[in-house]
Length: 471
Picture 1 (cartoon, rainbow, N blue to C red):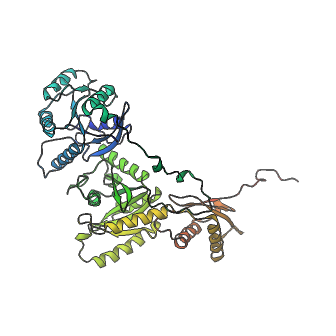
Picture 2 (tube, rainbow, N blue to C red):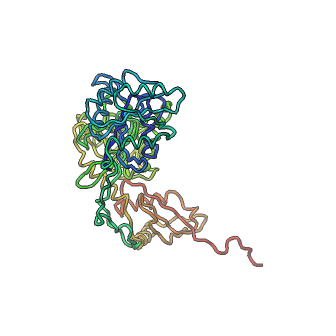
Picture 3 (cartoon, rainbow, N blue to C red):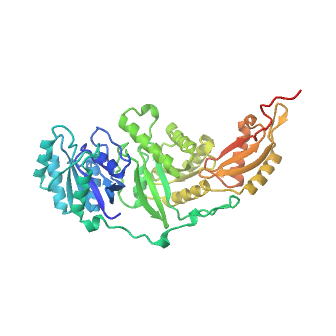
């Protein structure tokens, strides 16, 4: 991107609505409640021919530095310092407040370009608020309606005037040698492709509130990128951050804490949980963070089951390990409970960590990579059919109503997660216990722990079905 823009202003002036308008997606949560946004969220914006990075920020308020609002303000100020340009959004409908005046003075002291944006200018009676914006001393305000998309051309012109045409329309050159055409080449379905350990990896961090998810990501990044604190439920949006681990790009999603469904009553929390569920669906590997001091709550088990049902690769992280005294005994107990309480995730990787001190994070990242490798695994058809024949010899399928079920042919139909199709007779009569036997055999014989494995059975079409028998 050619430049970076931060959207700033007091709470509930429409910053997140404008952010969603510019990125063309409903990424940021929007609600009438003031202070919905807490972390700073980046996105790729397009505006009438302009492409740039946009950062949504929390509403700026005067507050003590140690309070939650004070930590939110520090995040917003960091975004302003990072950006090349600020969009200062005011509410033309409700008019200016002393907070707007204080924020204008703060932006002026920064010495960076500022575009004054008068949002909600489509509302009746907004003219007075629009003209009052001149008193802030930041130039002519640009009237827009972020909700209805009005005034976007004027906003584009104001951004170009503030940043300069050369900077606004600068294009990045892409070298032809950087284009990888190997992905378009055809692959032999009987060959097992090599795992690409250079491809960017999407990882979602989920768990109950106050399990330490944001603190963990901050430790990975080596900076206070995400808002943290002793209060439960600080994170609301699913925020993505990128960093490199041993030369590989990792895109990590921080999500809101997921409480039991019966306790999620407020609309805003429902939106946050829905956003976390979307992050799980779009991730490749999901790290479920447990509080090691109170692990295996019912909600922890339900989150793991949800991740596996979605077909994601899962890794358990027992956080706050620095607070555990008798570590050997606790670790043995955790391993026993993992095997007993999560039979559907046999072999799942579980790593004790401390997001506060950084202990165990390299081992956690290696477990994430190893799990993703299994999640992408493909097995040749020839190996699968030799294995299927051996399995039937060791444990033949049961006879149902006096007739033996025959498993004829097996192939892998997809990866991510691994899914297999078996052609057999009377597929509807095959008991669930035999399916579990085959899944456990695949895990053991092909080294596929911790990922969901799916097997589909198909009976060949009978050409004589439905035809009358001749007499």
